[in-house]
Length: 162
Image (tube, rainbow, N blue to C red):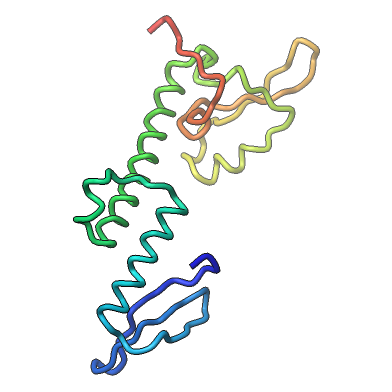
């Protein structure tokens, strides 16, 4: 498993079933399907993922859940974390002291290297960056404060106006 092999069941001609290990496009048979053998692989895979990702489940649930259920729980937690990160980014973009007229005034860039990225994924025709002139007379760029841009900002400070 540390080398990237994953285990699967494969049915051939509706009559035979095998345990297969797969890595990228390479498949190797581990022999005919046997329930005890398969359970051992699934137990090893579960322990491998716990070592790799850390123990995310309460100990009381560990014995009563199947491997499929445990994987669903992990996927659900990951989706929830993505949604929470997005919602946190929305709040940060709205309530940050550095947001002025919808643009982040903290992070100033020397060139407009994000505008094509924003044009590709966001609403075409909207202004996502704008050029400003610094006190020294240098052209700089600021970007619209939105959830993608603000979610991971370490300098976020909540505005006291709200």
